[in-house]
Amino acid sequence: MVQRAYPMLPAVLCEDLCSLNPGVDRLAFSVMWEIEPESATVCSTWFGRTVISSACKLSYDDAQHVIDGGHLADSLACFEHTGVRVAPASQQRRSDIEASVLWFFRLSKIMRKRRFDEGALSLHSVRLSFDLDDNGQPIGCRTYDIKDSNRLIEEFMLLANMSVAARIEACFPDAALLRRHSPPLERRLDEVCRQLSHSGIDIDTQSAGAISRSIQDISDPAIRYTVEEMLISPMQRAAYFSTHAVADRNDYRHYALNAPLYTHFTSPIRRYADVVVHRTLEASLAVYGNHVAAEHPLLPPYFSPYFPQTAAAGSLTTSVNDARAVLIPKPEAIAGIAHQCNLRKDAAKKAQEASSTLFLVNYLTAAALRMDTPGVITQAIVTKVKENGISFVTPMFGVDGIIYMDRMADRKGQVVSTDGRKWKLNMWSVKPASLLRSL
Image (cartoon, rainbow, N blue to C red; front, side, top):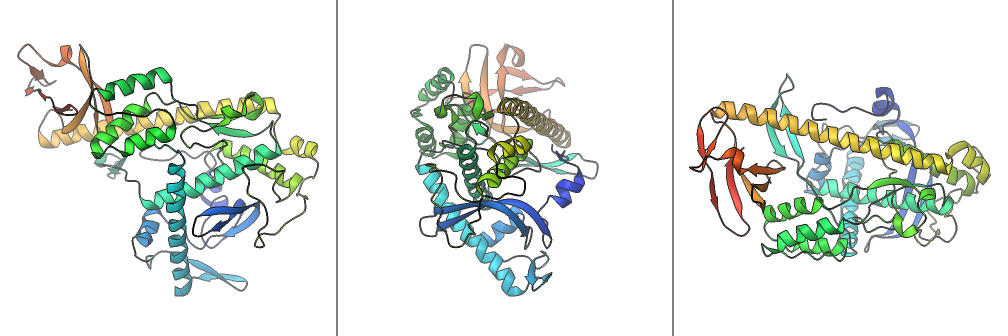
């Protein structure tokens, strides 16, 4: 929500005991990779229980400042271990943290380029950020910019989720909670592409990667945004599923990521699906240890001298049947959990969108009062012209809708506002058509 977050867990857990706060030990499940630095290729993978003592907690802006050539702010608390105690970080340790951020950034750029070269697709809607006054009312509105620091985290988050998906599916092929993304609805996609072709924009729909390349060929940012918005409509939502309930492994694929296996592992504080995945990973560790299970084509070979090779002796059991009984719900139950997680995730997304819309309406209403106008003037791009109206999107606010002509204009072409004042509706044809109007 705009004004506050509603955590899944009690505050004492999500804000303290389960949070990687700097300078304190926290228990975790970790995925570690040995990565070749020039090509960012994963050479080996290790899964296991760890104790993490975070050196510092960086915001996206903190990390971006380092990426841009700056340094960590002196006010930012950093720590290091000195023997048996934790102390404020030395200048050398702070420099090491900055160097780590830059290393991860270099790797993430290579990984991201390879991911899109191999056929990934990313469609982004406008996300709004609001500045609130002391009474919680919006006094500022702007689009949320995706920074290099966001992309850095995204690449390693995706790698972790894909790695864990391959691990749990290899260990428990009939009882893994995964996440898939089906291909777009063909009829709707064809309709959108026909609309775009009338404006001279051709979209190759042979694959997710082909769509991505078609979008990148559009040079005008506003038009590219509009095309992305139009292409979101035929896309299906990603969904959790149980491998027990899907017979064909080809249906496990994640279309947008162009990945054969994917799950959610990285946010157990705010997503219940991740908790189930953690328990499944725990069961795999109890049975197989940190070794890679079987000859799975998606798991790199285990040979790293940097990672400890532990025997298959978990904290609870080493029996597959016992591990299932203690840690993993029955396969039929996982399907029910997946369904419930999908319902809750969709509901949360709708609530988030409704909250953003409500605050945008309040902000625009207040802005109009300050300017003594019946609305706020912004640019809109026409996406479709119908007999009874015009479909449009507004890049500035991420709003789409339809202008119904029979409701808005009189015979003289005047738009009648709610307070009786009249505004002229100016229309003209460009490539593609655009419209200036009052919201």
